[in-house]
Image (cartoon, rainbow, N blue to C red; front, side, top):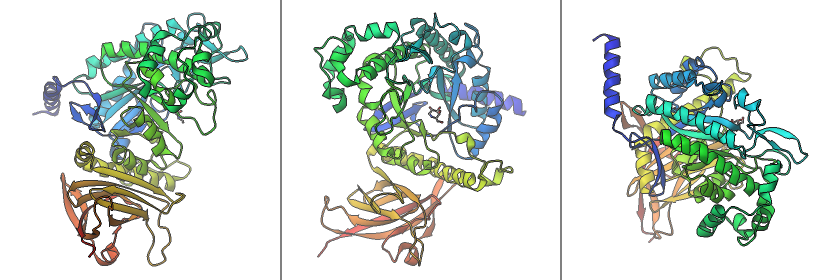
Length: 551
Ligand code: DGJ
């Protein structure tokens, strides 16, 4: 058969195969976060593009094949309002369409980031016909009485226009992608919030609403869901008060903005869902310690105020943290505690391999995505001469990320299964960790990890290490990671026996199967006492343990 005819038949077959499947969906399943694609759990081994890397169609041709070679399976990319609706009512989907085509050729998926009225609080991605018409599309007013480059969420016509553009994008996607499901989900706006002194819009309309009674739907929701109130929200909540200040005290400005961003986004998301019901989420810029609302975007979906968003925006499926701070696990935990499935849409690239293991292992998340991944150079075999300021550093980041994603991809059936059975744990260690070791418990054993050291000088061999541990059967574990030395103890909460290592095998994945590459003994297992990982290369081990009575 000629290539073109073969391709046409293959496309028809794949369309027929997928035609019946439900759109992508997100769920919590026995505590594990799952994204269903063609009704099967899918792990997003993702990366978000830099802001100026997806503004042309042609960039897809270089960026996506490179990221595919680096084992990324999903790319998060901006789709901007001014790009698809440059003139009011005239839509142009040429750029996202081409990215979809190239993603399919590369067997990749996409998550679109809808840069509508707001991107990092500001409104730079709204079309010029919106930005120029401040009467129809009003701006926020600062505490000094000046209009800022931020569209106010109180603009009724802005919300209608944004919702119309978003719904047009989703209607187009439904036509083009419902069968293939190349686009998995959409982020609605980007890191919304009021970013200026005082933390609240001071336009006349905002001031008038701020001094009026708090709307009954918000009060009713908060009264009906006391468990959704975080300690911070509950501490100053006076439901019998009248104005925002009476009811919410010191956080009134931020909560007022959260409610109005929530109502606005609800209009956009509901219009989109009506056109094509795929998962819609919002991301949040997280405050640094001691920052005030307005130093960070005030009224964004911060975990303390998730209840306000849930009341205002039921069309949003979940909220996700952009984690650039070092307390990665803590932020994940706060979003999880607020009932969200775990997905990290933005994170630091330099520590991404370790945090990816944490996200899928310890947090049982469905996706992880460091930021600016288009800055990663190609895998060594395909690399062109490198123009980056520190090519050696960039190349080592690239290979660490690529090797980690390759390993997770190969292990993904086991990871999804262990996530569902709650038989997976993970940990991350850095050389600035206040304690030299960290321990996790699973299957009756304790796994105590310290950073790998050189032999015989016992110097630290790496600045960080991470592992995930999967229990596959009683006493049998898969351990995947790098940079750690792991010793094994019996968990005293299980019994008072003593743990021993029956065997450690280093595994390799070829042609879809795991096989034993080496059996580790003697010097390679510290004389049968520990699992010694390579300092940098992520590797999968099968470890069989046993327990014997103390006397
Ligand atoms: C968070 C934003 O969401 C991204 O678009 C980007 O601006 C990064 N911060 C910082 O570079």
